[in-house]
Image (cartoon, rainbow, N blue to C red; front, side, top):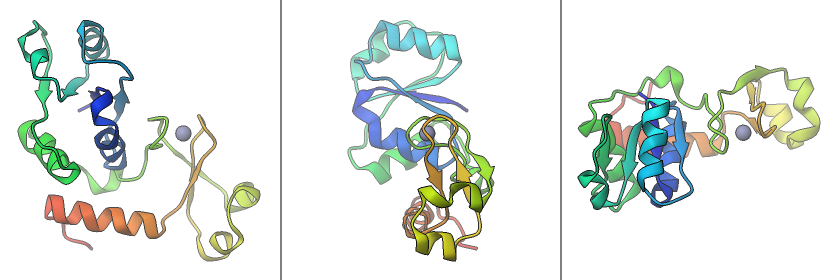
Length: 155
Ligand SMILES: [Zn+2]
């Protein structure tokens, strides 16, 4: 399932990307053009604006009730009956929503800290913004949070 989130759900959209979901971020209000974009791209629309529910829309619209990020993630997954695939975690650029590609450590050496170069083996690159991703403390923290939310086995 692919999502489009309105501007009140910026953090949620980054976390959905972390979970491997293609999630577009809409910088404007959740208005008619927001829903048109959702329909055009076949995305489930996520918003915190309740009045959106009153609009006619052929696709999925979810009014996100929770205030806390963790609750929001759980709410979206539960209400839309979506199961994240751990294999897909951390495969999308959190900034651009573009799939990351594998990249050779030597090719990104100049863009990463020396200790990361020395200690990490696996790197992924965003062709959009040029950000380099690798497993690290950020990822461990994120996984811990996801395990709490999703009840995932940490293995
Ligand atoms: Zn990017």
